[in-house]
Image (cartoon, rainbow, N blue to C red; front, side):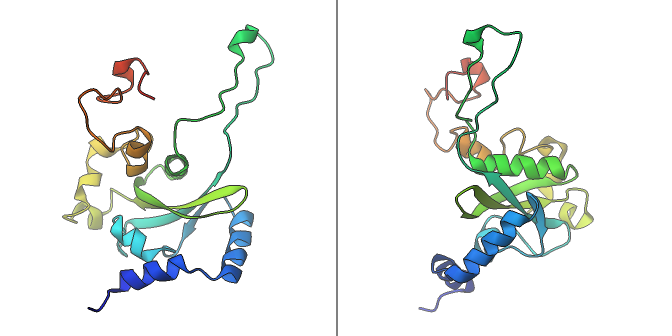
Length: 190
């Protein structure tokens, strides 16, 4: 049985050329943290997550620092027992990348994102973003839902795929302490 294009793209992604990969990483480290890219690097993954080459859909490459997200210790005006440094953020890196892309481009909404690589210091993601005000998006029967007002700030509210994964909403059960929300369970879910 013959395979499709996405199958061969996936196989090519699994067997990467290391020299090309090294030069890419050097370029990405030197570039800005949020960069607009002309076309997605992993076309098969992007198309599976909703990307189409049409007006109103853009892809951004986002760089996120690896390691524990420690906060600096406060200098004055607190009891010493209140000066704890929280080392683990309860958000995954992909969600952080989506929030940073959405913060930089406030007129766009995050559709989805995927991992494209990592080195010793950073994770790299490609974030698919949609302009909900474009007529091409409003008239699209698959993507018109994103132009409704209820979907404003999806990434910030944890409504994207990465946000739901980090919030523990992949599975359903009656006694889960993350449903309907963490606030309703007094933050005992995570």
